[in-house]
Image (cartoon, rainbow, N blue to C red; front, side, top):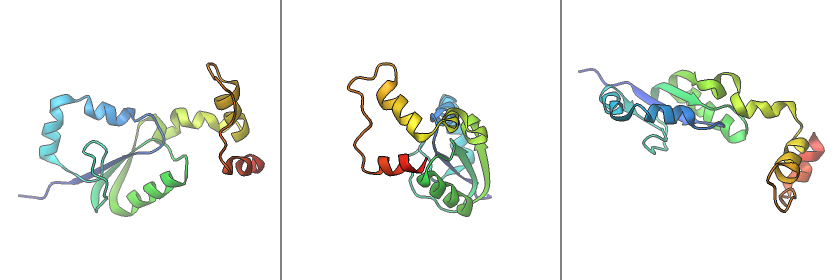
Length: 133
């Protein structure tokens, strides 16, 4: 009997909706388990990544950690597939690309609807980031 294909999945910057859709197949996921071996995936809480036949990438690349995870997947997976709007064309996270970091921080922490006690968090790196935009 041939070895089952190894499949890994990861969620980068996004809403996690594609993984939720996979879970929405309910008990039919058990048939999938008969056909493949899962490697790293939040569906099973496996956090290590071995050599895989297929890597499913959900979410967009939005920070250094996402880049690192994506590069690891590229090294370890024979085939990568972008799944969903965020991975394919940026989705909701990419909507912020039309705004500067300063505008995003002000809207999120100062001017946004429902903000109480407005103020940008006291993170020592934020002034450095604001000076770069």
